[in-house]
Every structure is written in structure tokens, then in C-alpha cells.
Image 1 (cartoon, rainbow, N blue to C red):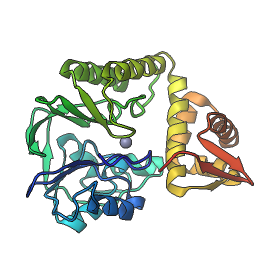
Image 2: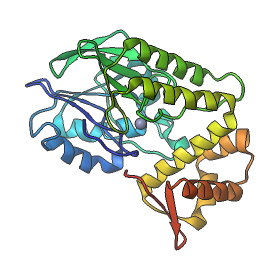
Image 3: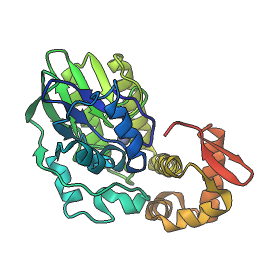
Length: 298
Ligand SMILES: [Zn+2]
């Protein structure tokens, strides 16, 4: 695994002579860095790449698809349920415009669905549904060694955000079911979409469930979490933003207005003040000389 940060997902490198496979391609603005890593010893060391497979079609997982496909001439395979989000390609494909995210447009050659199997790295992998963070996401499980490639369905210390709803939340219900499904698979090792590979699966499941239940009980807390995550993501892409520009930014990008209107009830100025104070206190950003910068790696 090529471990990246929080703007780029990790790349899972599955090597097999004449049949190399890559899982997930990172964010588009870091495409050159991704290609350099893939060409290096932790990647394919100059060997051809036959297939690129996505766990889901969010910008941090498919943003580099076009660059990787152009560099290697590989086949691109996406979850069947994601096709509707990326064909035809629009500014809103996989909700990017709504969140101020980008990805280079790409074409897929084939799809994978839950229940399908595929060969990679000399092993046979199963595709399983992993809805919640992305309702159409898949995870990939190798039953002999019990290796799980979890995407954003489970990280060592959490999981990808789950969209808030007042009252019943089908996204949280789906995420709960996905965690139960992971538990039933009994993985020995998890290769996540972000963060380090881990083996304490019970601990990670307990952690993710705890967060999910807190968000289920308190949709406003969940909305705050999503606002913070999306803003830090945008900041990782830009690397800095002027403090004075933050309210206008929050007003311009649709997801913030939507979450504020439904849950937070803060005007852009107040939303910006809360957001920067909270993120700075959490150590996720620094605010100095009128400029906001992220503290974590992209
Ligand atoms: Zn991700």
C-alpha cells in the first residue's frame, strides 16, 4: 500500500507478472505525485499496469483515474452502482460541484458488483457491498488470507463521513449494516482508504460504531462533522485560504448552505467564525497572518 494523506486516498498495489492491479488513484491535483509513486519501488517499478479498480467514485479515489489510464493504458473498472454518477460526466459527477471538489474525467471499461470475484496479486478477491459513506461503494476481500481492502467503509480510527438526515437516516442504517458485514467476514488485516493498515479490527469496528451511533443520536453533530471534513479537504487541495474569504467561500459552495439551512442555522459569517475556531482548537488548521492552512498531510 502506498499510504497517502487525507486529500489523496491510499493506493493498493497488487503485483503479479503481466497482471498488475491498482486499487484507487488519488486526487487529481496530485496526479504527478501519484504517477511518480506508482512508477517507483513501492509501485510497479516501471512494469505495465493492467487494471485500475475503484472502491468508489469519490474524487479522492477516482480523481487520478484519467492520469493513470493515460500513463499505463490500463483498463478502468468501477463499481456498477457508480456508473450513474459518472456517465455522463458532469460538473456534479459524484457530487463534486456541490462540495467544491474536482476529478479528471475518465472512461471506464468494465464494472464490478457485489458477489463478483476477480484475480489480483496472485489472489482471488471478492467484491462486497459497502454502502453508507457512498451508497454504491464496494470493498474487496481475500478470504484465504482474510485481507480486506475497505475503502472508506472502515479506517483504523473511524470511517468516511455519513450524510446527516433528521430522523431516520438510511445512510447510517446502511453504514451499520456494512460494519456488521465486515465483522462477519472476520478480516485478519484491513488495508483502508486512508491511514495505516491495521489488524485490530474489533477495535476499529467498535470505534466506527461509536461514532456512527453518536451521529445517529445527534444529526446536528453529524452536520458539523461533515462541514469540518469538507472544509479541511478543500483546504488540503488549496493549501491556504484567506480568513476574509472563508464566509464567501462557504456561501458559494452548495453543501455548506444546505447543511447550515437544515441543521446549523448559521449565516456564512457565523458559520465561518465557528468553523475556524473549532478546527483551530482541534489542531486541524492554523490561522496566522489572516491565512488559514491545514496541519495534516494531503
Ligand atoms: Zn476517501
